[in-house]
Length: 398
Image 1 (cartoon, rainbow, N blue to C red):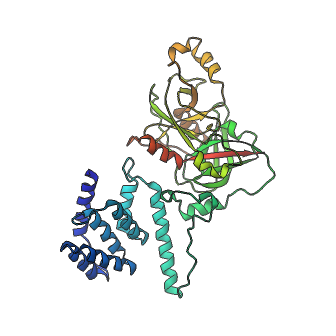
Image 2 (cartoon, rainbow, N blue to C red):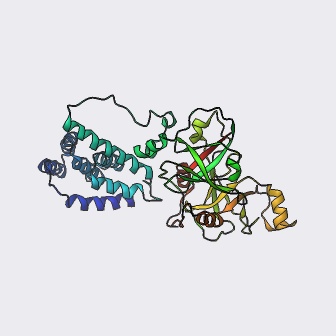
Image 3 (cartoon, one colour):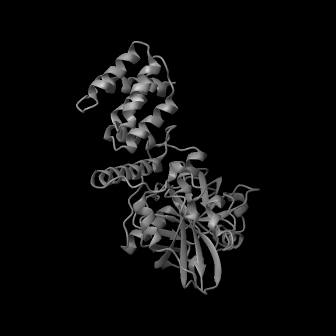
């Protein structure tokens, strides 16, 4: 209710300061006058008529009036009309939606939706340009995202822009006679195609395939750290959604979320997006094992290796590794009385410390990673949403 009141206030101000400088000005003003006189249906009919004629401001006014709620309030429908306006390249509607869809922790947090609306705006510009130059040539109506079988069932809120998708099409793997060795997980750490995974996941690979946001591409190995069991990969494509590091000191008991693609095989790989899992647990101990590993109580399955461990701020707190015998390492590093140090009846696993990871990545000089901002805490659903669009499945062939 507070959000609705807040939006109502903002929209009321925007409506009163509305600039009627275009050719539809008087007709929009007339429709709003009808609305203020209680003739809601007539007002909406006139505004809809203007929208059909290409008036993006009329669509925006529909959204404002539906939020304003003097006679007819419907916030969900209001957002629909703001989106209609944004798809017609209305800058004010785009800015309003951007402020809501990029508000982390907000009830309308849909970051990828902005990319989708921008792509629609680009198509709208192209379409109108063509109509001016040539007679209208009707193309069969198509959803540009349904052509790719990998994106057939993709949630429209997370559609990737056309430019991004085209960049991935150029690196799609082709059929080969290489043998499938196995799979693991990884995650994007920059917008320029950099991914982090485990060294043991990509060992002996002649070809590495990365599955990211329902797109598949061939990656090359840039550098590995055998001791840390980490590796940096690179795809020659855009990765708009990526994770940042949190190198604040680790604390025993802090909430952690491990994300990855367990049990991925070549036969089900095209449906890998449906198989990403998120497990919750805590940090069990802050004493480093082998100088860079930490014990966590997060359940981890085979295939999760290389995936991120996120904290409550949606930032990287570590990287999953399954390349070690956990029990032996505990006894060797923490001693025979390690049971006194750790909580009992907890399944222990290992993660590579985010502090060590970030320092190593920056030392490579391949990319430089700053710390992410601890601005808002996320619940499990929001962490899952972040992971869905930043975590990748990694396949190894030889």
